[in-house]
Image (cartoon, rainbow, N blue to C red; front, side, top):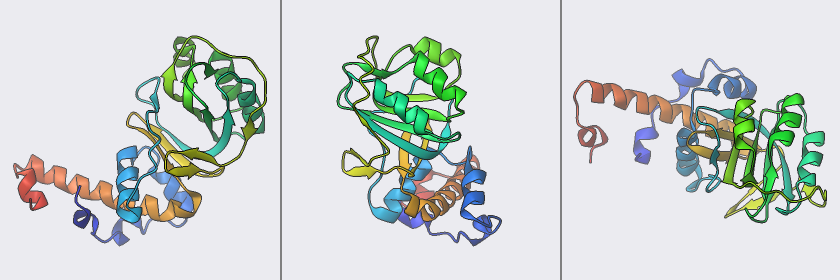
Length: 222
């Protein structure tokens, strides 16, 4: 969507939010990864979309603060350390060196669910997807395979993780839904959420005009 359409005033939209926490919690379920990625593009000229990662079960959306881990695909023991070091309400962001073996599955999902972790995002592979779906624990993954490695526990937890041309830091925020996964750095959270609200409100206005029979090209001035 053209950038100039996003320049409506946010004051009336945002005045009801008294703090960053209020804004973040109020927007859960309201904005999507599309809104967030558009906001990042408007503000920074690029996005922090995690490539190739999708939900294993549709209709799930998670939003929250990240605990990170990096491991080889042959070592699913490292993710146990990440679970143990994660607090309730956090989201796990796991990266493995390839998709050849799964670093996540039914047992790890149950362990994370018991700790009240919100969900797991895997830049790598998952297995046991039927069982994971049945327990309603949100998992987003780049690949699904049946095989796993061994619990070596040789990886690292809560370290910066390079994904393409951006870095995911421990404590960053993430939104994951049917559209994919978008990471938001903590120091850019407030402005990105505010821009997302503006984009959402602009789209709602355009949809109303479309329902009235107007042409999208006329609305956008193309």
